[in-house]
Image 1 (tube, rainbow, N blue to C red):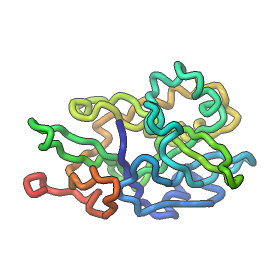
Image 2 (image 1 turned 180 degrees about the vertical axis):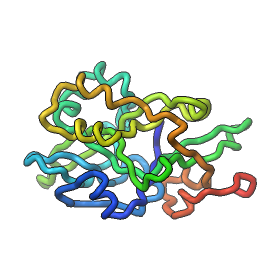
Image 3 (image 1 turned 180 degrees about the horizontal axis):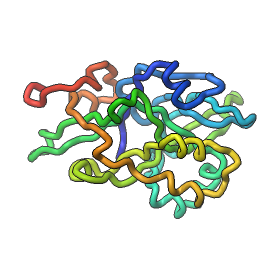
Image 4 (image 1 turned 60 degrees about the vertical axis):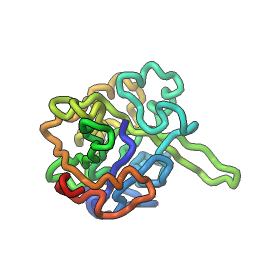
Length: 223
């Protein structure tokens, strides 16, 4: 499961990368995003504008298996996802995500930050739900879609977020495409050789820890 990620690109890079037409909220300089926290998603609003807005990471109920990550192979088997996959798809801006490389003992596990070299920001496929709270304010919550890791990374990281290319993002955010079957081709995992994983501080285990140290490469011997 993916339970931590970072978003460190600046606002301009995010607007350019995702062709944002309307900026409502943009969170950046987040080094250790955890479930239930509020971050930015890119969505197409009811007027057809590519919008960057805020959303909570984790669908309700939060304890449900699919609230934080949704397995790409199981989406069509979950009828309650149908409405969101048809009309409420989003892209989650990301600079890197975290996994844990296990050692011989559980205490020897090492936090790893996984990035796409030369990409300050990339987009993860997701979908969201929306409702109005007791005061009438519109609230959103999202989950990110994951797929099995490939190559050598799969030996220690079972799943990775579905990272979308430009064509995939265009289709995923296109409100005229409502047939999920035509979108499946965009939900393949990125090959592991196109990503880079490096060790970082195990302090990322603490969701309250938010510091540039979370994404800074370290020498494990001195962690």
